Amino acid sequence: MAVEVIKKSGPTIKAGLPPMEYPARLSRLRERLAKDRAGGLLVTAPSNVRYLSGFSGSSAMLLVTARRLLLITDGRYKDQAAAELTAAGVDADLEVVNSTKQLGVIETATRSFARLAVEAKAVSWAWHTELASAVKPEVVATSGLVEELRVVKDAGEIARIERACDIADVAFAQIKQRLTEGVTEADFAAELEFEMRRRGAAASSFESIVASGPNGALPHARPTDRVTSPGDLVVVDFGALFDGYHSDMTRTVCVGEPSAASAELLAAVAASQRAGLIALAAGVTGGAVDAACRKSLAEAGFAEAFTHSTGHGVGLDIHEAPWVAADSADVLPAGCVVTVEPGAYVVDHGGVRIEDTVVVTASGHRPLTKTTKDWAL
Picture (tube, rainbow, N blue to C red):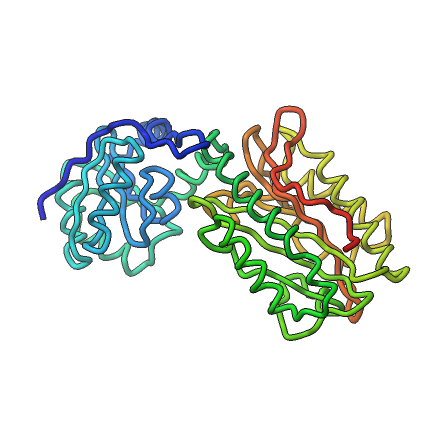
């Protein structure tokens, strides 16, 4: 099939949302490629393809060079790809061919290159071997070229993450009282996910976690047919997907009055999360935020009960850079979006986790999830 040329016409602006800065993203990537002396980068990770071109299909490759943008996809996405490239406002060529002919398209497009960079984490060894045999340039592995650009979100991205957070906030507020009515974990998860879809989410960001009573001692418990009962702590971890961007939030509530042990656990985790949020600011490392949460829980006697990392970046992927973990040296820049989610888990009793998605600022942070952290239903 002949190459279709998609002409730049300016990004489409969705009602009430800032435009996405696709041309600026491509410019930054091209500057990096020039420094690395690569003729071009073959982008294969779906989230990176979308970040650079606006294309949201499940199958595509994007060749980025100093002067050209070439999207290669198959016939399922012919019309969608053309429409999304136009909406993104990027100058691009579109090649629609079946999978058996895609290597030939890449070979033709890269004949003049000395080096072709590929995303090492997004391709298999077998496919890398096929590519290296099919093309003229030296194929070189890269890691993080696009992901590093994605760390700082532009206004359009932050607005979409915040919209996803708003959807999740409202959905939870609408149905959380169901937990007092003897609902099963699985039914509550299904109702919560339906409510998010009904309010504008394209999907849930991940399989919702609803863990009541002793099930809450499992940080990544899956919803079961256990019925919520008076005195239960209930951990609810969920998120909404809106226009490609995710939200992530956890709240722990109690059905009725908590026991003394549950009240102590709730207070300790709430204090730990406050400590982590206070530590957040541009220039701080993810490890420093994690340390603040751990120090608080250790002082409350729950050091061994905190068994996972404190947080992660959120955007086109539900888990992405930067990382908020004990061994993380990632410096958190202004404009990055991360979670802060300490937890404490006690076998045979239950668990508590409190999580917010926030945007880091020069002086601290701005919360994007706004649901109250009051445990009472």
